[in-house]
Image 1 (spheres, helix red, strand yellow):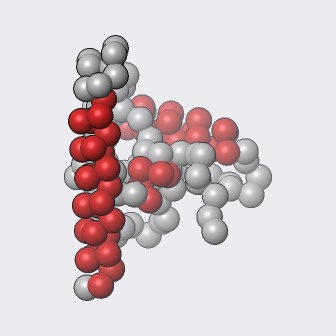
Image 2 (cartoon, helix red, strand yellow):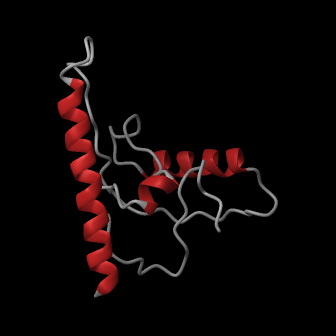
Length: 115
């Protein structure tokens, strides 16, 4: 639909900007060894939080701990909760297209506040 085309156009513009940035980095001394990492979707974790009573920092800490607790053996040091900006911009490799859960998806702050 129209929404999908709009998202693909935004994604193409973003990728072109990233490509231009990487090319321009060749001209910057000391930046030739830059490493870019794309987060990959592993799984969702259900977590009850009270967004009205808890601070963003408390909620973020609970999300991080829940992800580490749900990590497969050996992945505890590399797994983390998604940032809200990564979710909003669909910057996570393998992220499902739709949320089929009965709960809302929430990522880490900043930018976690709704409109």
